[in-house]
Length: 149
Image (cartoon, rainbow, N blue to C red; front, side, top):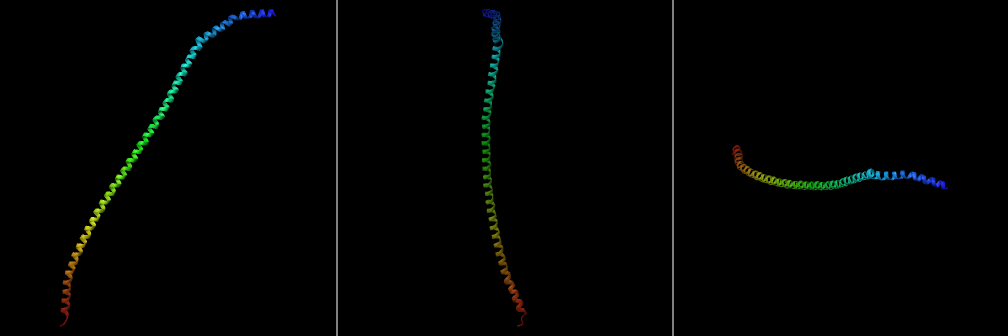
């Protein structure tokens, strides 16, 4: 057993330089390869996160502006509808005023026409009365002249 332990001790002594080289290789790779790689990955992650945060902020800003634009469009549309309704009311008032004016003028023309017709009828009646008396005298004269006395 002592020989086995002695052989193991010899193997360990021969393995010590390899073990030391592995430890040195570990620290060398850690310093030369893994630290810069870790630093580069951290920078890339921070850049990615920063870009992601800026993108989220941009999306939030775009959503806010879209809401503002929609509200502005809705307000403008309401204003346009209100103005159109006011124009329609004004047009209706103007039409009503024009109709009332046309009715008054038509009523005036009708009254004038009625007065003119009444005057013409009165003139015709007087003319007929005068003509009827003259005609009656002519008829009476004609009848009396034919009658033997």
